[in-house]
Image (cartoon, rainbow, N blue to C red; front, top):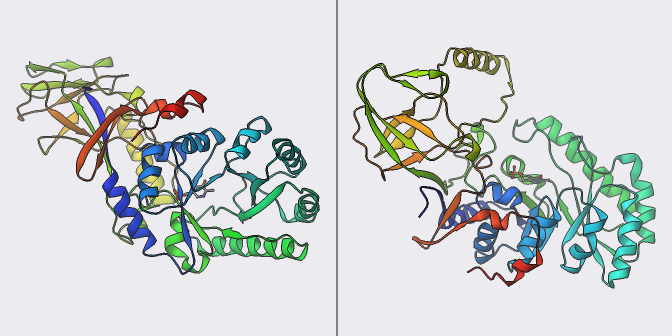
Length: 399
Ligand SMILES: *Cc1c(COP(=O)(O)O)cnc(C)c1O
């Protein structure tokens, strides 16, 4: 049994799915975005649970992520959102995986590869409207239409764009992006390109713009129980499926004035107990995403926080929980070990500590323990599933 694991509550995932789909507009389906290993929760388990709830559309970033889902009996629509390379297209096409096309010269290449495979390749067109990342621009549409008209082995199943400022609730920018998208579709329609599925919304736009729901909404963040920004909190009632835990592996009673850790950054202020837990920055603990100030108040907060850190004072850090009480980190977080000052709380090896660990930063090596129908049903190391596609795994039926 591991001394470090993450509990992922699949019942909470199903609950969130029902909450989100109850807010869908008429005729609109939810496409579950399970990229980056379902934001760290485990793509296969999350997709399976959603499929059990009736979800029939999934999206990931890469072809290897898509092939993994197929190999694990995810049978619905699977869309690859990111750019991909032609060498991986034949296997994707054979597995009925939809590819995003966002570059003109890919169209004839995929058409030829699909012909060689003897199947039609399903593609979705990505339209660039203001994200500045990938997609066809307005000037390319005429040529795109001509290339598609000549590509007999391609089946266009949809077209989409991605909003840059949904989470900031910049309605004007979002509207501009939306209007450009609709204009692009009108232009393609004039050139005889029919688009069955139109979709533009991520989690933020799903909540803020029901008028943009169209045929699909691409939702990830809400499914895993997060909100796109604090401003959205409470807009839907969601459950948090994620709990990272570590067991205390070493305990030491120390006198006041004991130095702890690298650079002796910490010195105990009284006689106390130090507890060691087997998690560190290599596991993603204490690793913060780069802070980008949204306004002047934010900027001040970041400056104060970083200045304090320079003097060894950690402001606004999340605390760990031991027996329901807060304990804090003593000194610098190590690569795989962290010391806690438990103060007056009695502590023994084997005690459980609840650790604040960011989902997308959590190392895939950490064991995930899934909870289903109220029971802990399975423990395994998830990174087997996170490796690039490998045909041998097709034998692995999972549960
Ligand atoms: C990640 C992603 C989504 C999902 O975004 P959330 O805000 O997590 O719901 C939707 N569309 C695209 C293209 C994405 O890359």
